[in-house]
Image 1 (cartoon, one colour):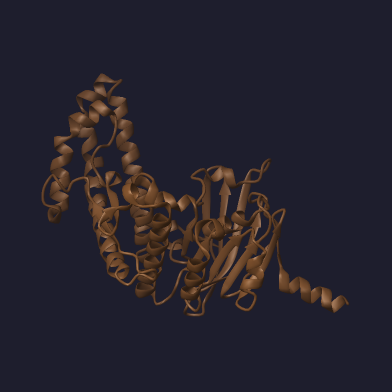
Image 2: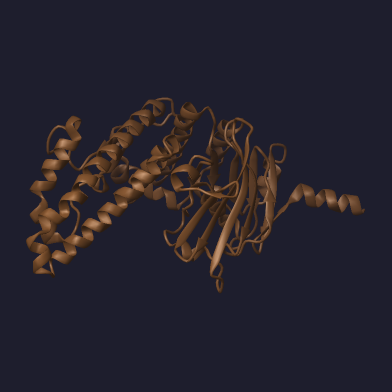
Length: 376
């Protein structure tokens, strides 16, 4: 797949439109000019979410009430589609070829894998970042699961509201078991789908990790919060029993204590927990390895490669790994990277399209040089 062009409206400090090359695209310029903002816009167009913030209103330019990102995409079949994500406050609207589409359909149009310092939370941070990594992967293979995950979040929110209300209202507390039952039934069904999708995806990633580009001994293991409670092969029965057993504890805590929102992913380097024992370099290498495994799994499913985003490449990878990574991606994924080093323009001059970013405007260097030559 290829992102042919992108345009923004009132999105952070960005201005104008960019026509992208189909191979390596390098955005360079001084810090604070908007290089990362362009990557964020690409990611938002792909996933209808930011990799930098969970608050949509933060991407809207100061003083404005809404923002939008538009772009054209060509898939492996050669069909071109026009995509748009518009944001109003904290709500979003996803559009394909002028028609509004739910996220479960929109998610099938463009997929981006992103390597940034924030994404290092997958290996360094808490379980939420690792669950998000898995969920992006399962949705990339099965876009309708985006709706399943959304429905699950809504069920958890409704159940949590009931649990908190029961602490303050005797009437609700007296009938809480009956009030929770319909939410728990939905939770059981949705949880089983999420658990199965995540564990299947982990198995696919592990198969791919055996052939790592950087020869790193990386493996992963899905950790269900229920795995010590019984037979995970009977997941629906197990979670149903555990929900009943934990109802009093949930009432006391005012929180949902059972479900895949409490699961985790163990990332191992040479059999040891990378989060606890891995060096900074090993953690970066592991994340790149996981990202490349995700690209490979996606290609196996769709016979197409996702696009790849790398922010501040110099800060995150050494020169040797940058070279090997870009060699691997060449001919596979359309790649977008940001750098503040002008030296990359010379280093990759024969294989990349270059865009100098200043005050939110990205100028294609070759087009600028051609225009100057024409005037002269």
